[in-house]
Structure formats: structure tokens, C-alpha cells
Amino acid sequence: MRSELPDRYQALVDVAAGCGLRQGEAFGLAVEDVDFLGGVVHVVRQVKLLRLHRPVFAPPKGGKERAVPLPESVAFALAKHLKRYPAVRITLPWKTLDGPPVTASLIFTGPMGLSLDRNRFNDREWRPALRAAGVETGRDNGMHALRHFYASVLLDAGESIKAVSEYLGHHDPGFTLRTYTHLMPSSGKRTRAAVDGVFTDEDSVHDGPDTAQERLAL
Image (cartoon, rainbow, N blue to C red; front, side, top):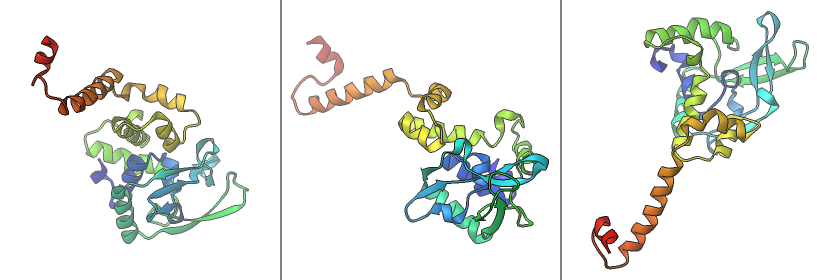
């Protein structure tokens, strides 16, 4: 599906799936928010549409700024993108249409150098790419699905619910747990593996039966 997007938008998939950003946060990501050397993305704004589809800069959902680890693969994708499509300084009002002007060097913009409009982007870019890739265009396959992918990767790797919650920008780790509990690895499997690991280490330093069956027979 990523490859079916126009080239200038493909790195959006890397950012959303690799850092868990919401769509508006990815649209509002600026060069100054990315610490390539430190390996951190600072999520401090989103592009939000108000009445008559007019854009403003606003804080992330819930007003909660956050710092997210920047994987090398995503950093390389961003660097490659910026080489082809240099960041554009965009000035938008802050929070309200009559709010104070704020300027940011946005990484993702449209061909005319404007901030991305979620409705236009979804209609003209995202859904056509889904169809081209043979994926249904329903609500479940919106760009938000990439956040679910991000959460599933972290949980499968054994990351804590607290850390996943912080990286996703949730106020309550309990919400994260309720949302993604079906992705949590089996506690029974973890327990068996932990105990087996200790027993295996203990057995390696003692002479004894060669198999589990022989040990049980004793």
C-alpha cells in the first residue's frame, strides 16, 4: 500500500507506523521536531481543520506533547524524503482561526507547498492507494490503522504498556491496555519460558539426566 502512494507521501507511512503518530501529528511534523542524532521525535503540534476546512496548528490530541524514539529505518526514510522534498516553512494560526501565527518547517506538504488537508488527502491519495493495493477502503483501514500496527509491534516485542501508552500519547495506560489487550503476549507462555530458562541454566552447571523425561522419572 505504501508503494501505491505518490512518492512525496510514502514516508508518511514510515512515520505513522514507525513512531505511532496520528495523521494530524504527521502532517504537523517539522524538521525542528526531529532529533536525528539523539534518535527522538518530539510531537508538539498537529494540523487541524476547523470550520470551512480551514487549517490551524494545534497541540496534539489532549494537549499532551511527547517524545517518541526514532528508529533508524524511519530516520533514513525521513532523510531520503527531505532530500527529494525539502521542508516548507508554513505559517498557520494557533488553535483558532484568529489565533497568533505560528511558523514551522513542515516535512510533509502538498505539491503547491501548502499544509496537508486530511479530507483531501484521504480522498485523493490514501483511499486510491488502498484500492490499488487491493485493500478495503473502510474506516478500519484509515491512516489511524498505522498507530495500531505500531502498538502491536511494540507489544509483541515485550515493551511495557506504560511505555506504549506514553509513545502513543494516551493519558491513561489503562486505556492503552483496554484497547490493545488482545495483542498482549500470553502470560502463561511468558511464565513457562521464564521458569524453563532458569531451570535450563541451573541444569547446565550440574551433572544429571539428559532429558526432561529422565529428570521427571527421578
